[in-house]
Length: 221
Image 1 (cartoon, rainbow, N blue to C red):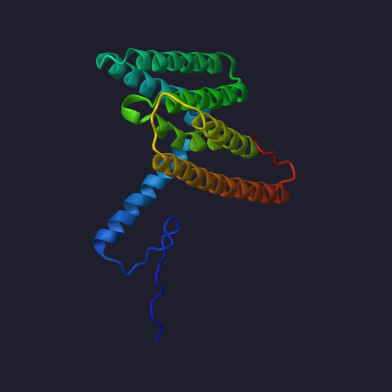
Image 2 (tube, rainbow, N blue to C red):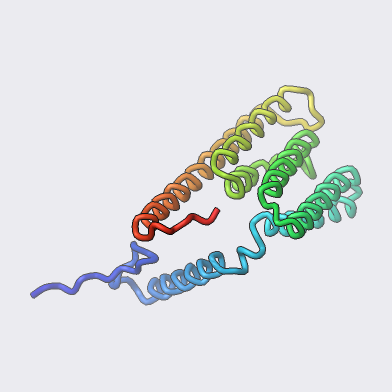
């Protein structure tokens, strides 16, 4: 007598029908969440907002909030720096909404964030937390730019950070901190690159399959 085959959730290949009720509920919740997110990110709303605009909104809120906090704690210089970058981010948001020039906006955002990272690395930021912004940069640069452009931006920022740390800067970092900081930045950059590479390769593979099935298929860039 044949044993019933175990069913697998296509969105979670590791799930099996023999699992507990609690695990089954978690798998169903995860599947529904993934489907809803996929519909939202592939829908007209995310295309209308655009990645540069979405990033500008998030960055403006964070920078404005941290700037107000710095002013509240009498760190006026740090607050002014964050406020200036918040206003530049708001200007980028207005520009991309008016002109729809996402290519320029992507480049401007990456350059702006790189400058902010270097300034915070030089000054140390609030309580020495300035270098933490570096770990966000590879994700932003590689995700909103083309793969080779993002990788180039990450490498350039790494080089500029090394040059900056070779001078006598305002912040007092220990040798151990610098080594760990550069190692973590390198690790995050590698992981971001691998994810973007796999995603780009999968997209190219899908485009090739679609072009075979439908010769009139064109990739939307």
